[in-house]
Image (tube, each protein chain N blue to C red):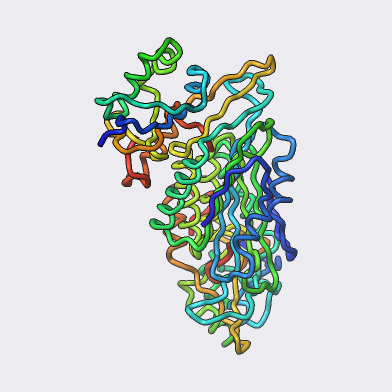
Length: 159
Length: 159
Length: 91
Length: 91
């Protein structure tokens, strides 16, 4: 179990190796990588900047991760989220889940992403080709995605 | 879209890079890596050998992948499956799905694994510490996992 | 005891709430009677037009007390920091 | 026309079916009247004790005709190759 917030990029193989090296109790590893898309509402974007709430971010990601371990038999997990200024195609977020069996790994990874999207205090601002910044609106679909897990929220208060 | 059957190991980062490099239409990449567990029915295993049906394997994986693309808006996908003799901890299978949105990538990756497990002609034989080989039994749970997708099977005949 | 008895409370603002208030954080001494997050928002709005503008769409503003998500009706009693921000958009 | 009219049919065996029959593949000329996968299994079983043993648990043996999964009732008419194997265990 680990969470990291960083400006630097991450390497998928290196992260998965660090998590699973010399272990033979893991049979299934799922990774999710979120990347910066090149367009927003049909218009090209020049860059995306990510702001967060230091302290709360790590606390919230830790709570979400602990909840995933409570619900699924995970052998290991990792959440890495980048902050700062990113370009189209750049990595934003990495979630890794490892379990003896694939369904636990798949479900836990999707759960982590759904909760991260609605609870972790990050905010995206897209800058368009003319240099104008636009804060990204929260998607209703993300709230719906979180709701389908139907649990007591991992942190102490509901929205 | 690509399927490969090979003795060689694969590198997660290299495969994902090859699939997504210089593309800005992808927002979500899911990978599934299956690895050799060190025990079977509670006893340690020394190695695992994987046999397959050359020709049919590639055809079946291709059908499964095409079905995933028919059902989800995927930007790219990859299936790599190893054959030959493997040790505990070694990689067996890699599935990568890339889409503009995460739920399509997650669902398609899980679908590919569920179908691969029940339809792709691979057979595993585990060799125990005393050198005795045991063919792995098919798991009822895999057939159940496939059944939940409730579709016309991607190839022309049902089991 | 409420947060108001002379103990400074740290307020943080993020994303467009930060841009509209013109500050990332500040230490305030909250008067007696301000007991919930909603009370605090009402009090902040009265401090000037930039706060009025920042909290105009108060239905979309989220709050955290001591780094945990809370509702507008949650108490701020004993809190060390309260943060205000739009719905999160990470991942 | 059935597969039996003098055209050799390639039969492949995998995993423990291969081990029990003692061969990975063979070309056979199937007699007339053998029209389904089930007919072919019955004919193969009569060829010797190794086939009898390999197909003893015929309920768990799977078949493919020309590299596509089929049922025991499927026709082998015009087929080039038929494969027999246990339930698959890849992934």
